[in-house]
Image 1: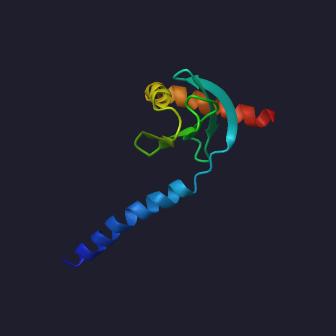
Image 2: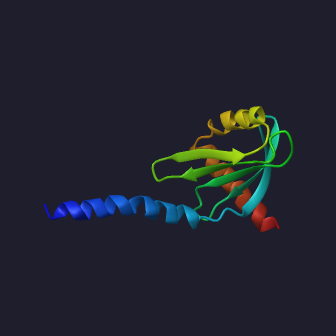
Length: 117
């Protein structure tokens, strides 16, 4: 039973380690401009080389941001902002359809845009 306290400590530490990793992610490479859900978005890639941030450029979606974060097992898509909900929902529906090859293409585009600056 001496293993039990170690397991509890590891379970409690895991969320903190995950939060620390996400906090260290910087998403400033790019941007490239894309249209999702009828609104224009700036897309930046992150220092992990796998994640993206989408920031609404104009109304009706702005101000709004989506984070497409690589988890190790796939991607999480979450958003926040006070822009028009219907516009954000339309963009969310399109972003949910992105597949690995689409994400990689966007990352490559942001990196190319960064080199041109």
